[in-house]
Picture 1 (cartoon, one colour):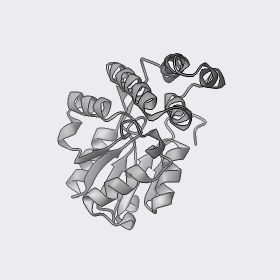
Picture 2 (cartoon, one colour):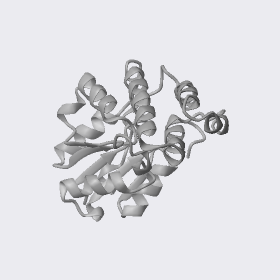
Picture 3 (tube, helix red, strand yellow):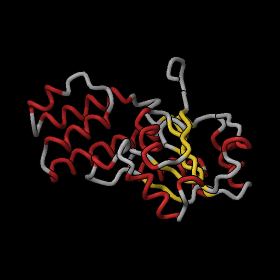
Length: 203
């Protein structure tokens, strides 16, 4: 990942990164569509009608969000737990994003705080950071709150928590994400937001 940090980060004290994409490809070896299909089958045990509506969905986060809109809280907790376990399995074959360690190191050298703000499970994030040694350079992780998928991005909740926990004014923060929901969340809180296009056609 290449970034003109002199131009974009010069007046920033906090660099926030989405996890899946900017830090690593979580589902590189355990594809997201496979996880989504397995999650839909888990939903089927609670609501065949909802599972039918979700047939063909390829994004496990959308499946979880749909479950939260339609099913009781205790059921959503069980589906969230299933997804967390799938994400932990996926971490075994996740591929690091080239250049991100250099970006983090450069930001830290400049005296900036670096954090993760992600819709992914916090346990999966922690495991990847530990395995790659990035945990020594990441000051905070604000991830999907268990059983509360409505708080995932594009809801600004996670970014607000990151800003609040570090006492950072939005104007002094930069957020890098690879999805429309990341951009929407960043704009909602007023942080400088950079879209990371990690494959052709994604710009």
